[in-house]
Structure formats: C-alpha cells, structure tokens
View 1: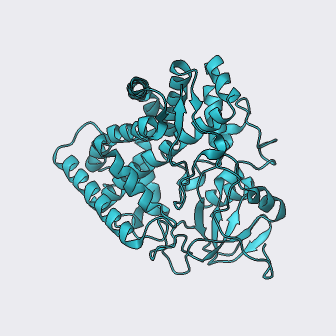
View 2: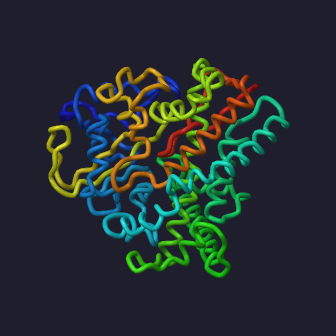
View 3: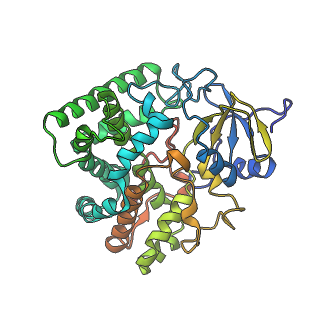
Length: 407
C-alpha cells in the first residue's frame, strides 16, 4: 500500500509510446497488490495489477461496479463523475444481483458460441466488401474509417436490427459516454439524451414491426422464469449493446493490427501459416497496451486483496491489461507468442458475473479481420513509425485515434 508520505501518482499512467505499457504496471505488481492512484476527478482509488488479485475481485459477486452509490469514487472530471457514476434509466435493476442474472440469461441465448459461429460467413462477407473498397481507394488508408469502425458497427447493427449508416453517431455517443477529461458535462448530457432517444425510438419500432433480429426477439420475450424486459431495460440494453458491440472491437482491430505490424515478423508468421490466427488474436488481446483505465469495484464489506486488508466503502480499480502481463501467470509476459498455451486465459473480457457477454462475437470478428488481411493484403504495413502513433486520450477506453496502413 502507498504510505501517507508517498505522493499519489496521477492515473492513467503515461506510456513510453502507445505500444509499450506503462512501467508502473510492473512496478506496482512487484511492490504491493493494491496501489493508490489519483483519478482525473481528484478522487483516490486502489489499483490492482496482479492477475490473481484482478481475477478474484472481478469474479466476486459481493462487490459492486456501481459508483453512483454513497462513497463511490468519481473517475471522470465531469460533474457526474463518469460512466460508472452515471445513473441510467432502466439500468439499475439489471446492473447487478438477481436482476443482472435474469438479464444475462436472456442475452446469453443470443450470444452462444454456436450462434456467433453461424455469423462468421456473414461477417466475412462484410469484411471482404470493406477491404474491396479500401483497396479500390488505394494506399495509404486509415484503417479506422476503412474497416475498424464500419465492420463492428455493421455486425452489431445487423444483429440488433439497427441502421448501420449511423456509425459516426454511435462512435461519437460512445466516446462521450466514456470520457475522463475530453468532454464537458454539457456535451455528456446532450450525447446521453440523443443516444437515449435513438435507442428508445429503435425499441418502439421493433415492438411495432418485429423483425428477425435480437432486439425484436427481446421485445417479445416473456418466459415464466425471467419475464419480459421493461421498456427502459430494453432501451438500456440496446444502448449498451450498440456501445459495447462496436467500441471495444473497433478499438481492438486497430490495436491488434498495430501490434502485429510494428514488429512485422508477427504478421508475416500469420501470412505464412493461417493456423496461427486464433493464437495471434488471443495474444493480441492479452498484450493490449492501450486497454483503458480498467473496471471499478465498490467494496461492500471488509475483505482482503492479496493479503492486504481492504475496508468496506473502498473503491478499487482493476487493470485487466496489467494483469495480463503478470509473469506469475504468463511467463515472459512481454514476449509475443501465438503458441502460448494459456494465452486465452487472459482477463481482457473480464471474469465472473460481468464477463463480457459478447466475447465470442468479438473473437470471431478479430479472427475474420486478421484472416482477411493475411490472405488479401500480405504486404500490409504501418505508414508511420510505432512511436508516432497517436493514442486516444481523455477517454476511459483508450485506443488509437487512427491507424494509417499501406500495402
């Protein structure tokens, strides 16, 4: 633990460059299971960077991710304290506990491995069309606008039954929702209301004219065990899926591509042997250096983390990306190894009751993208040097602003 005489560092930490993690990750793991850091709001929270500690805390259903409660830390410098402190209509009952379990049972039916694998050919078709257009436009191309944003938006919109032409709206609303320091409270409020209105209209359309899509299915569900989602819960679900369904995957397509092309032998290995695609995707997820600030937990009762007492009312932040570089779990953690036997045991998608419901879909999308690049663009390269790549600052999700590639 940080003693009172030690200055509390600001968080997020600075990085040597965007593809290298902050040195504080390893330093904190070596010193103490819980380190104190100061968020952009000025509030101090405990930071977890060890694999066992992070996984254990994420998997413990006793602790809350809702920081809107009394004593919850504010992460953002906005007046509302950021997305984890923000109260959203319809989210309260399905955020935690039995309500969350009910919600996950309903959603999990749509995101089974079998159903997501059935989407692979359709996702492949979308990816090929986007790569066709990118190649026709010519080198260089910004991967964000050419593929990394439109592909996940097209996929999640097709799954939900929403119009994918609104991709830039989704991207803007999502970024504002995830602000740490980039947007004002006025901008947050306006974006929140616009997104809420959009999702509410979409739910009403599906209720009036159901189609063959997930949102229509959810509006019609009424089973004896879980009942039906209320209008506000449906709206909250639509917003959450539109945000999470494109934001993280779009980000990860760019980060994966940058990680592979920055040390090009990683990419060349996949071009030479497509059997490496799955392992390369998992290793890219594990080694993500731009994964954002992490996930908070409000400690509801006295506990211990790695043998360190943590009192009820404390706020902890779990950094999954730092945990994924813990040598106690992943030997030589800074070495990129697609053959690593346990690399799929990373905690990029979380753990426990809030484990990402869409993780199979994200994996399929990333595998399709990498396979398409390796097959169709074997000469793919970064236009810029790795140290010249620009991070997306001021938002909780991290990531790259853009990624220019040549071929």
